[in-house]
Image (cartoon, rainbow over the protein chains, first blue to last red):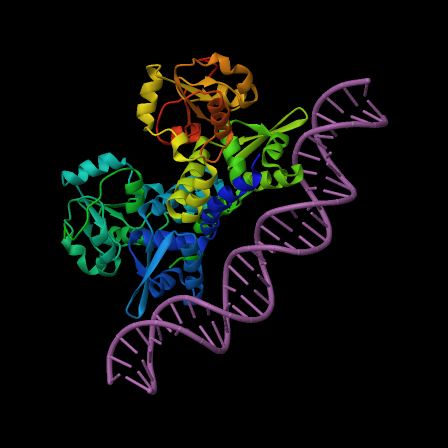
Length: 223
Length: 223
DNA sequence: ACAACATTCTAATAATCATTAGAATGACAA
DNA sequence: TTGTCATTCTAATGATTATTAGAATGTTGT
């Protein structure tokens, strides 16, 4: 019953699936969910050749998941809309839910549960509002400016060690970065712990926060 | 910075992406979202060889999106959890949102907007509750029994023409089936319109309804 | 116009995937 | 047990995809 018509419809959706069937492309989507970036920046983050990054970006573009524009010498890529970030979050959640292998690999990579934030998102938000904890965003400043968790202050990894003194000694600290697969906040926990601070890692990034329907802040507040 | 570890994580998520990168496998997921089915049933619905259906199911199984069990001579497959149906809905929505090609093909296939339900989900639900409209589920009885829209009555395609008289002549009718890509309700609209009924197609199926956070009914009520 | 640079296009190879046919497995029924 | 049926496994084919290198494009600054 109208098989060829159906084939067309499912084939189009499969194009989206094909676009997210490569680890490199997924990593690109996660990076672009933080902020728009040039091909060079993306290639560096992925540790791949610019030519390869460009080829993957072309694939993502043909599936309309990203768009590009020229900015002088550079080519800037961005997600074509925020629901693409939502798709990435959903894929990751389904993978975590269904693939035992992922949960095991994840458990080995992410530091032991003792270093993770234990309370729920709403509780964390309330503690941050009341100033009981200090939430720091260790991503590059530019990504922070575009969107960050409420009450979070920017403290990029590159500056962290130099600026530790800015953080009140008696307060508990929560560090977050680009999401569960991003390891910058692990590094931050290591550095701050070594200085005797009480610090934990939050797995969420802004995409996860947004997907959960929670509010975000923009701009350079809380500096 | 720990590139190989990252590669492992993204590779696992990409397995899910690879599983949903084939039109046949997406169609399988949509069918299984309605109810568990045997390999034979699935192959018939897809109009493909059993061997091919089996191979695709194996791929889905290795990504842990479906599980199988033996029931006598038959092998019965089902989604490993309902969030897999949610993933299918999300993929389709992203595809509709981003792929102009899909929207165009879709526009040609789905009957003109005049035959579509124009009101929102909550409004429709309210109209059904008050009995102002009759909602009919034209999927096979078994799929209806497992989950259906509130106040919907089962009226499988195979029996529709024979049972038209059961439907009150003066009420507006809304027909739905497995979702936007399923064409059974189009056929129902054609048949009922020819009999002079005022009937429209609802694009949603139970997966879309569930993804929207709306309630469903189970069992054989409203018969 | 020219040189320097970022990015894309083209072409080529190796790797992976879809599809099909034939053999093998496991359950049922005589 | 034997035959039948549904399904999976194995092997083989052709069709895509990932990746790399080299040439080509477009932009900036001189």
